Length: 114
Length: 109
Image (cartoon, rainbow over the protein chains, first blue to last red):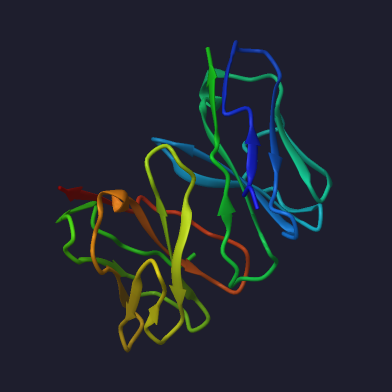
């Protein structure tokens, strides 16, 4: 298996632009997570999907952020409009459902908003 | 969430064991102890987890105190590839992983 795939790996955009990050989870995994990592706040969970349904979006910073999972093999995280403070590394992770299954993380997307 | 306390950093020589401590004095009976690590410029990766008994896998060993208020991750022979940030996480009977600051491990050649 190729693992969790994220694209793009790097994104540089100007303030106010729309940004879409993409994730392909590991086949057979029905839990998907989006995390954000910054120096100031560390790794934070943004949203959790189970069987394509958002279960916990309490970590989504504000309405500018939205996430979708139209099918079991694809998810997007969208920021519209983007702001400089959104600059961070965004990770997608997937796992089988259950508290004892490890989460497999993708390589991340490094977002820079100027 | 129950909290964990780890040293900010540790150094080791290559091919020597590394013992990474973690304190979790407020752990509840259903919390599992998970360890993840994050190599430079990569996403976190799972290392090991346990509940009460010591655990071994190909990457590391996990020693859990009898009262479960502390645990130690043991890397038996550190290599340069083991240089990473190691996170000790208490995981309740759900999906959440709450990452703290972790311990930055440096391995000297």
